[in-house]
Length: 274
Image (tube, rainbow, N blue to C red; front, side, top):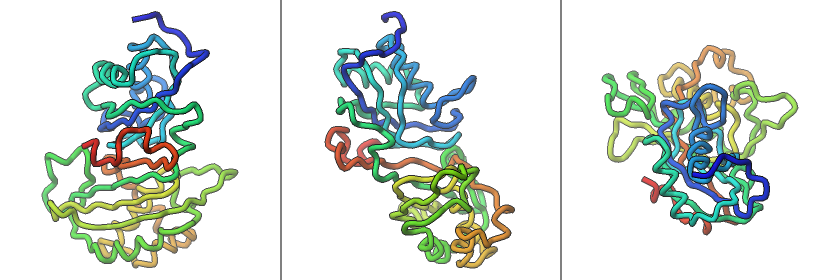
C-alpha cells in the first residue's frame, strides 16, 4: 500500500452503489470519534489507494438507518479498474457495509446534486409479540394499526409542500419545500404482520420521514383523525410535539435516481442489490 496522500489532481471520478445495515453507525455523515458510513468508506478507499479522498453521498441517512442503494462518489488518481476497486473495498470494509457496484463517471457527476429522486421504505412489525429476527431493521408496534386510515392520510403528503413544521431543526434561512412523488402504506405481501411505508421525493428534510410516519402511526391507532396530517403540515396540531419520532432502525434508503447517469451505475434497480 502506498503512503497516505491527498488527492490533488484527480484524473477520474468513481461512483459506488453501497448497501449497509446502519445499526452500529452514527449515520452516514462523517463525525469525530464515532463510526459512520462515510468514515468507513473513506478508510477503506485509503487503504486501497493511499489517498485521502472525500466521499460525497446521495443521502445523509440517520444514525441507525440502513440502505440497499446509497450512491457515493469520490475523486482518485488511481489507475485501478472499477472491479478491483469494488473487490478491494469490500475486503477492507466491515461486514455490514458492502459496495455493490463501482463505475467511472464524468467529473460533473455529484452523488447528491445530480440525484432527482430518492426512495425510502419504513418498515413496521405490527403484532403483539416482537420479531427477534427483524429487531434491528424494523420498528415494532404491538397495537393493531388501521392501514386504510393511514393510507388515506398519507395522500396529504403528496405534491409540492412546505415540510418545515414536521422536520427537525431545519435552518430558518433555507427552503423547506420539497416535491413528494409517493407516500404509500401497505401490508407486505409475504408477511401480513409487516407494514411498509414507501415514500419518494426530490429530497427530504432531517427526520421528515420519521416524523410524518409517526403521525400516520397515531392515526392508525385511532388517536388522531385523518386530517391530522394537513394540520401538522400547517402547524395546527398541538399534539405533534408529544408524538415521539419513530426510530431510525425502520428506515431504509431503497433507490436514488439519476436520469442522466443511471446507465453508468451498472445497476438497473435496487432489486439487483439484494
